[in-house]
Structure formats: C-alpha cells, structure tokens
Image (cartoon, rainbow, N blue to C red; front, side, top):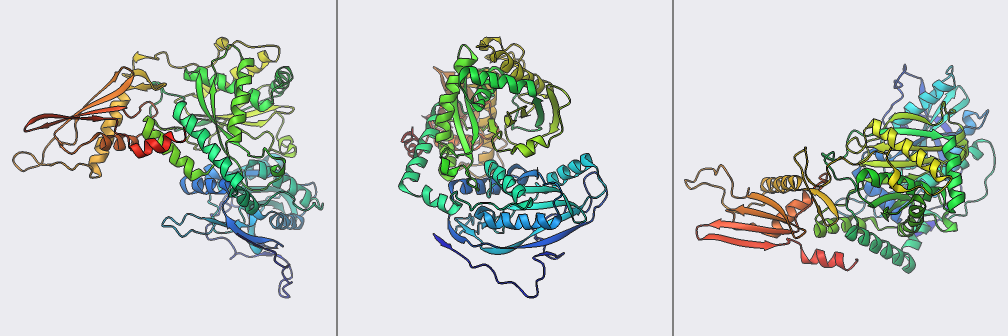
Length: 636
C-alpha cells in the first residue's frame, strides 16, 4: 500500500482559465443525451474541462465495499448501480462558482479521484484502488434559460434518468458525472450521477452538503474521516478479518436455516419482471410514526421495518422472513463522515409470529442490530456461500424482499425542495427501475412527512394491491400510535392466494419441504429443464444411437421423471438407459438450473433406475458433494 502527497501543480502560462470549453474532451465512454431532450427540442450544450490538483494520492487494496460494488457493476445494468439526483443550488450562484465548487469537491475527497485499473487475473477483475493526485474531468453545461421552475425540474429529472443508464468506467476519474443547467453564466440546477463504487447513499448526502457550502463560497474544515485506502488497511487488519469472518458465519446461519425465498405460490411464474413503483407521502403518518417511537422506545427505522415485515408475512402466508436491508456500515463514530462506499447488505432473519406489532418491534430491533453488525462482507466469499447453500439445501437464496432506509442520508435541503403534497396521503405511481426483487421498501423521509416508495413485482403485488399494501402500512402506524395492534387484524392488507397446500386450480401440487412451500409440478419442470440443458452441453456420456445405428428418437439421457415427498424428503425417481448417469451429475445440473425458479427446489434424494440388457440397476444418493457439505457445515 502506498500513499503520496503531490505538490500543487504549477500554473500553466498558456492556461488562462482552469475551466475550458473543450469539445474534444468528452470521455469516449460517454453517451450524449443532450442533443434532444427526452420531451423537448435540442438544447445548446457544451463540455467544460475542469482541472484538479489535489495534495494527496496513493494506491492500495480494495475495500470490501468497493469489491462488492465492482462485482455488481460488472454484473448489472448501469441504471441499477449508478444513482442520479438533483442537488440544490445556492441562490444567485454563478456558473464559475459552481465549477470551482466541483473542482474543490473532487480535490477534497479521495474516493471521487479513485480509479480501479484492470487486475492481472484472466477476468481482469480489479484488485487495487488508485487515487489520482491531479487530472481533469468534463462537466456538461446545458442552456435552459426561459424555463419556469417546473420545466427546469422536469428537464433535470429527464437528463438524470438518461445519464444514469451510461456506465461510469472503472478506470477513469472522477467517480461522479456532473451536468449543469444554466442561463448564460447563471447556475440553475446541478444533476449528479454517482458511481456506487465511489460513494454510497450516506456518502452522497455528505457530498451534497459539501457542494452546497462550497458553491455558496464557504470554506470547509479539513476532512477528518478515514479515506478508502485507510479503510482497506483497517479491513485487512486482524480485527477487520475477524469481523468479516463473523459476518460470513452470520450469513451461513441464515442461509442454512432460514427461508431461501419468501414468496412461493401459484402467482410466482418466473423471475421478477415488469415492476411498478408507488411513491407515498403523508404528514399524518409521520406524526403517527413519531408517536409509535415514543410509546415503544424504538427508532423510526425499526418501527417501519417491523410494520413492513408484518405486511410482507401476511402476503407471503409465512411467519419467517429473510429480509435484505441495505446497511450504511457507519456504526462507529469515526465512519459517520466517510465519503466512499461502505454500504452492503444486512441479512435479517425475522420471525413475525408474534401476537402484536409491539412484540414484533422488539424482535425486529434485536434481529436488525445483529444483521447490521454482520454486514461488512467479503463479497467473493459470500457469493460462494450462496452457491454452497444452494448445493446443500437444494434451494437458492433469492433477494426477494429489500429494505433501504435513506431517511438519514437525504439532506433536508433536498427533501424540502420537493413540491408540496396535494393530499394526505399522496400516492403517486411512478416508473420503476428494472430491479431483480419481488418487493422493495425505500424510506426517504421521516421528519415532517413520511415519504417512502414501494417497488413491486406484479407476481407479488399488482398496482391495485400495491396501493392497498401502502394504505395498510399507514393504517397500521395510525393504530400503533395509540397502542398494541394484534397482527391477526391485517384484513385489509393483500394476502396470499387461496391455495396453500395440495393441488390447486393452476395445476400445481404444493408441499412443505425444509420449511419451504414448493410446487411438485415446478420441481418436475426444473429437473426436466436441467437434464435437457445438460444434454445440450454434452453431459450425456451414453450412446445416442438406436439399435439400427440411426438417431435414437428418445435419447437415453432424457429419463422418465417422478417426484414425490417421502417422510418429508423430496425424492425424484429417474428411469434411464444411460449407464453413466449418477445422482451427482443430476444434482449439479438441477442446482445450475435453479435461478428464477422460486417455487421449486432440487431433490434431496435421487433414485436412478438404469435399464440395461441385464435388467435394472439402481443408483441412489443425495448427489451432494461432500467437500461442499463440509465447507458449508463448518460455518453453520
């Protein structure tokens, strides 16, 4: 690990302005959403080069948060990783003052000047962070004179939505992209797209505060929070390694004993798709929430998580939930002002089977504290753990239910800048990002107004049901403000489909196996699809010709399949003429086909009936790899 301090760059006698308009300075990765605004004519715009010269730089290993987000960046669409927002602009701010403030902001925070060069491995995955001491970046200025406030807000939102879908390359700086709406030399709006490998939600809130002060001409005290390079060093210390090991054990316990999926019923027909979003704002609900907190002594985050979980359990028809909550990982005071990406998933195992909401609030507090403490993760090890759990249990963890509490990360100036609500409550349908979740609860504001968004997959909640769910949450808070609320009284909230066990009208055959509700018809489909895929990829080692030497119309590898539950154990009987097929072969193929099949699971026992010239031969077993079982068991 290295760090260096660079002397301030000497002035260039040929450079009269550090903010130069340079049409050739655009990043080759950049798209240009400005030629025609999404709902308007083409607008004049220019690229302005901003040069920075900081006093610090260096290099070191990745932080755990950086490693996790780089994996997500390489896997997911940019709009699922980048975060766009419109930052407040001080009254009367000029374009020059705004550009100076952006330069100072980049110079101030090492995380914004951090690049992740390709690593030496075959997949070029980065293994280090490099902090640039000096360099330049481009800011886009879009002429927006003549627009009123609503038109400016609409244009800023549309440009942000277009820009968020453009990747922020890992190997260049800064980790943030800026667009300014201007009227000549007057600054009107600032749109920022933040790469999540550079700043999480809490860090973005700090950046907004710093930007506003700098753009207003104020001086800021030196940064005292640890830098990402220092965070990485702490994580690689013996104490940091012990904490990561503890987090891995926590995840292993939840993945080994808790539900791998929350929603499994006849409405679940495939992977999450076609999500819709609903924005909810209510001043009355904020007062109710405050009353519940005073009465129970719990934080707003815990109360909202408990109320949300009660409604999720009611819809799912099950008491035990596995909830992914985005953790800011700023439990220690020294990290409160860190600008970087610390946020990772906290995996909460919560039993909602309580008599009333007060009791559930108590359970939620304990469960969430444990999960948040164990949310500093080695992402590579956790992803391997998810694979191991799928191999051992036969069901794959699906990040179906997600909670993201942003209420402490959105500056008051941003929240106050929103147009006033037109009703109480105000429910506004919105387009939803393509997130691979079944239900997501994002808490945006708790003081003065309770603002939250629900993103729902229609296989779980259609738009009408999403509105009912939101109103049920508000009603639950209103009742809890005056006393304990029995959880048996959630009649107005959406519930599960009528069929919970046995055959149903959809043709499913539902059984309870390993604490999971599964459809035997879906299991047969899973096994069949897995064997078909395995055949296509060459797993079949048996003969593929008929008695006359021509093609066999029914290849030996495609066996007859019968799925049953015997003494609580999911069992599959396969009849095949392929003498080489083993339980391990089938299990590997079935587990590989699990993603997106939330109503199925891999059998726990395989019986393969081999038909040959000498009669039938039986091969049976779990198909599990003993090395994987031992590795997983060591953590649980």
